[in-house]
Amino acid sequence: MQLYFHIGDHKTGSTSIQRALYERLWSCDSVRLAYPPYLNDVSMARTLFVPARRKERDALFRAKADWLAGASGDVSVVSAEHFSNVEPKRLRRAIVEFLPEHAKTARVLAYVRPHAGSIVSNYTQRAKSGTSDQTLDQYAEFVMRNDKFDYLPRFGGWAEIFRERFALRAMSRAELRNGDVVEDFFHHVLGGAPFTLGAAPQSNESAEIHELAVIRRVQQLVPEGDLRPKTFVSLGMALAEGFARSRAGRSMGGRVRLHRALAERIAERYRTDAGDMDARFFDGRPVMVSALSAAAGEAVAERQADDLHEMFETEKLASLDEAIRAFARSFPERGASWKSVFMDRRGHLNEGRATADKPLAHDPDVQAQAGEVDRAIDEIVAAGMDLFHPGRTAKSA
Image 1: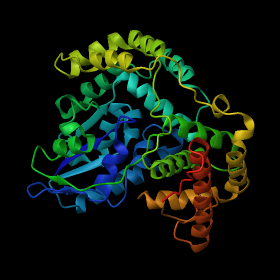
Image 2: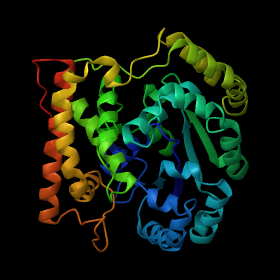
Image 3: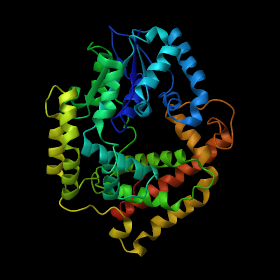
């Protein structure tokens, strides 16, 4: 069996790929692909770089070895974008120790989003999940001072350890098979064999600029209480998905975009790394360099307003704030139950003994609390849509 480790990168369609794998949306007559009955292996990946999770490493890797031993297929995939945070040699050591039959054959597949688009996507994700109060300009200036988006050292490290068994694909429509990352992924892991793909719902929706302003306000006003930060990541995802369902062709400001001056600073900062990446991974074709130039050309002239107080007088926000404050009063108590159900719906593992911060998703009381949170989220989405489209109240599906 050929084993693939799909390692992301972050914000390169990993959730959509995992959804297609988990829901068995592919059909291939000539190559059998085995995938476990859950969405991804984030928990296993985190044992390799999160100190508090290291004690779980042996159990999770042994469980993976047992599953692979019993699986029937020509190909299998271990997928988690969190593997991109792991030192390549650490993953290699784990493969040698726990999956020795794959030590010389396991392949690593990664996707890389060009610099400017990756900065915007990562900013949007952080704002959506409540992990940062920074504006796009502040976030971009912050990351340009560190090496987060200097790609060559990181991806070069993977190539050094796994050599010809490491493949890097550019997250660019022109580079992907039929412009689609999910189709590109299956084409790669199935070795070019003919296959078909069923339709899948959008995963981890990107919020438009006005929606993001509403989501940021929710994240700012809802107290953390005893909830874990990951609960607010799920909350941001649920709000974005609610807006996407409710949009019905109406604009919510369009996608988050760089303004021209910022795009030019990003292009200057990453031009060398882009050229080095093209030379190392794309046969010298200007894949990453051209993307930097295109980002400057596609930028808007001025900074987009990203705060509701920039867009509306305070009294105009009354209905939305009322819905958010009602939500904020109950979410700290019900958030753990809601997150458990939300993650279970998405195929994430929810096993083991229930605790206060991890109730079992199929408990009737837990589901009832989660349903109340879902309805409150729908009310926030409706109030947010009505703010920008008065008189055309949205109804979330």
